[in-house]
Image (cartoon, rainbow, N blue to C red; front, side, top):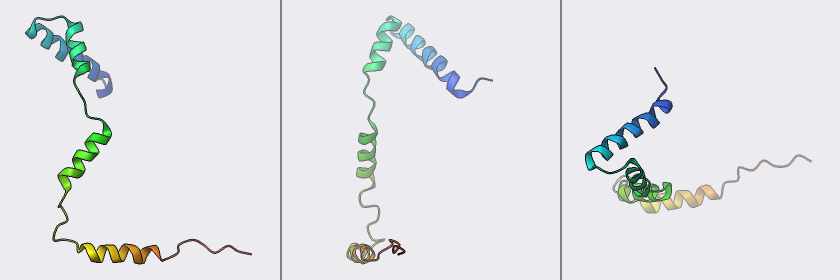
Length: 84
């Protein structure tokens, strides 16, 4: 059995070939259309994920207390003292 990475191009080709047959257009046209279809970039996917998660912590975390803890933690030095 072939690894999945080797099967992907074959499966894609078969899918596109079937689509070309059904739509009665050339493979070149189907490939051109497939390349033009917009695939969201990593940034857009991340932005969309963030938008979907808005309000997820509502009622679970006190925002003011969280801010106080963040500022308090910034005052703690984790840097090692140099040895002289």
